[in-house]
Length: 261
Image (cartoon, rainbow, N blue to C red; front, side, top):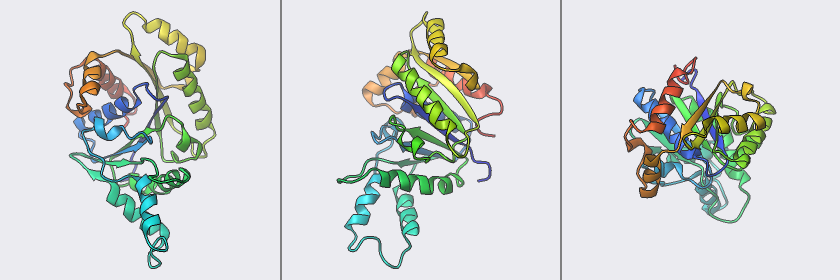
């Protein structure tokens, strides 16, 4: 689809990045901005669970499939065509969205293959969806390897820790070096205790240049999210009236221009 936006959710592991990626998918589904492509680009592969899906195939598994074929990729099929076909087979179809999971190589070998396959096919894939949401890996590997070249909005997540804020500083440095500049950045300070909002904002301002962000959202700790994660409940099925989701939805809705037109 023309002008199909691609939204990357980035941050240190454990800050709630996957939950925010799922929140984003949930908002877009409610706004009928479908079909959506959700990409779990984190090797820990947590996005499928919070979206209520079972992983069937991953890009990492494609590497092992090609190794298992006698002599490698069949001679009568060009390599890129073969990989594109295997990626299509790895996509899980759900109601309103599809899911592609990066995963890890299942055998020994360089993880570069997985990154390269994602990089070479992501731009092509995103054009067939109304929007794409990418849950990026904590190690920033595909930022540094340019696999986010299709990204036009980056949502940066930090919890109230210096390590999380410093990770975002590194993200911003890498993003500035990318060949195709990212158009907009928003910052979410997640799991902030009640009464600590201003202290957390000041800590963020001391580590980051907040003027680089289109907007900043402070999200409270939310027991409903804790309970959902503890029981394995899909974020798509949580009560939309919980405080954290309500705040996130208002935040997304007031962005101008909107994430998805």
